[in-house]
Image 1 (cartoon, rainbow, N blue to C red):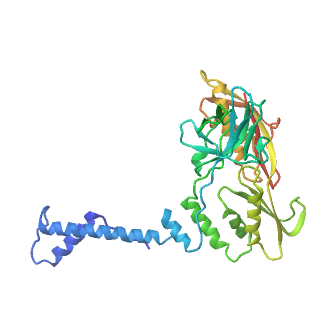
Image 2: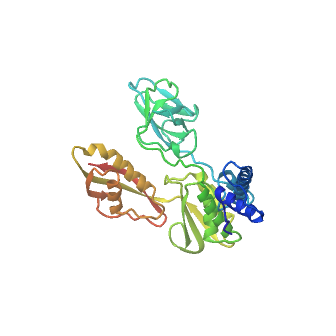
Length: 374
């Protein structure tokens, strides 16, 4: 129902008209009169009550509730907003003179040059420098640096910083002189937005009591933000025909989702799968692409001024492609042009050495290997 709202002036005019119509003689409504002051006071109260009514109507509908009110509304259905996701990346711990070994413990802190973001070293047993007995990383005596994984201290998109911005050691580490990040940090996401929360609620309602692709997809999307997935029916993990079986391919944006994430997806899908069906959950097949191109820029600018930004823009675009999506050659040029109006021409664009699109399999995803900009 559309409410017929009135502003302050309309309320005063309507009350004055009602008073005058009931009076036997002309009533003084001039500015400063007692009666007008009473009507204006009543109009102020009326505006306040009108605002309260609007507030009540807003908070009692999911389509108009926002923030904590929307959270409270969704809580009645046991549905919670997905939390923020922590940004991750790799920081190079370096020293000027590689004399003696250096030790970087898990939890060691580094910061961006402006001090706004702080990152902690995380454990990675696959890293060659990892020492399980010391719970940290050992930089050998003959090594001048080590690339170590870090995770943002505060979840959210603010942790997605650009390359060469993490340059400060939060505290001294013996044997380590300086740090830097050669690549940008990614995967950080703010808490689920109100619009995304509402859209997920619609899928929640539409997938109740149904063993459908929508129900399976909702179960996956409910795990965490930023998940990409595909559901292929009547085939096995190798792509061969297999009636009654479906394959779920999941990616968290890295191309290499962890075993724990795949296990979580397995459990979530198993709770909603059709009875009598079988399924498999797998990571995407990686199609690595090496990009090369030549720029022509307007004087007095030089190619070197834009090569880093172009490489970063292209890498971000490619790594964000969903599962099964191809990489068109023309889109790479478009991304490069979009970096600056000073880029006059993008030529000799090649993907893996050829001027052709990259098309991954249905369960594959394209990820950047290298980006060479001349």
